[in-house]
Image (cartoon, rainbow, N blue to C red; front, top):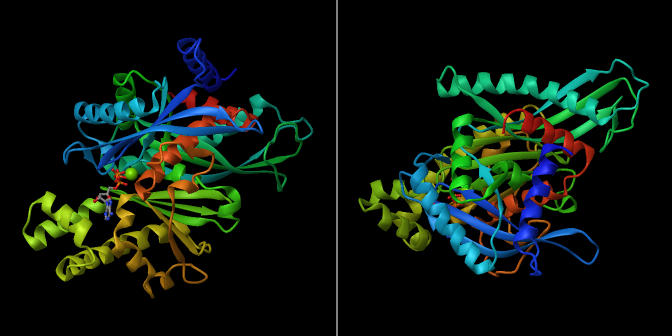
Length: 428
Ligand SMILES: Nc1ncnc2c1ncn2[C@@H]1O[C@H](COP(=O)(O)OP(=O)(O)OP(=O)(O)O)[C@@H](O)[C@H]1O
Ligand SMILES: [Mg+2]
């Protein structure tokens, strides 16, 4: 059994022991430590009539974070963040009426790097059927290379020379053997294996902070998931289609962009501008406090001209940043003509207004004007909301994390095992 499966079995065993005599199914938690809000969900893992795993959201909680607790999506005051996460988790736990044993935590922020790399490997013996150990070796080799690249980039961007960078999250996006696309390569023969791997890397210090939060909350850390990855994979594949989409999560401190093309994620980027920047813009222009500016933003974005004008001006600056990120993600290839929005900041009417304007997108490789649409909380696949409280765009990211938690449980395929084995070996 691989370490990840082993961990999951231990967790579910513990849950079962703790709930023996009662009928409640095992519960897991998802924690989204956002710059503006810590958000927690408690999800019970059940099976539907067809035997498929489904997550029923039994409880949700939210706690506002202080202005100095987070910086651009990463924890800057662990003690304060633990207090906030505990408040959010307690609220979710109370509502759910059950205690989760394990948690999946989202990781985001400036120095989290997500990207898809392609590696092609020639096999020594093309006639030998590919097996688990060989797949793990292939994946490990491809990731080693990606890790070195990420280390270089993060070092350069952070200016810190000896930074300990870790692989936090990996997934196989596409795989081909002698040009033939396969979803599970075990048992195939062939000379050349092509792997498209999505990897997310982060400095160890960020990961350590998340581990501390889980420990302080007395929860086993089931996994750390790159948030833009979770958002970009939260839709039903049928709904997403082959063309894919550009996902934009506008949070409080950051905006995450993820590009999904041809059914797989091709990269993620982060802009250190979110809803808070708009509030700060109003603080300056109106000469009011942060709290008053936030209130003006939430209630007067459409009704008061000087507020609307200021927000629109800042939204154009925000869009310039987004345009740059989409251009970098696109490279020379065509972009899907769909932009899907989530995150609390996406509720700002000026955000969709500037994306719907003409012109800005024509310098990007869109085939036509991109359709802009907000994601609904009910669109996240594999989950059902029993709380009836999850209705806003702010809820999409925590739900997307909960969806990943379910996949961690169901991930029994050879490919998933190989990935997870490698991620754990690399020190998470
Ligand atoms: N109705 C609304 N109109 C405009 N802005 C809103 C609305 N509701 C929430 N926001 C803004 O959304 C932001 C918070 O969104 P969200 O909870 O997604 O951020 P976060 O996940 O905490 O931050 P991050 O993802 O950057 O770490 C705040 O700036 C808030 O002002
Ligand atoms: Mg967020």
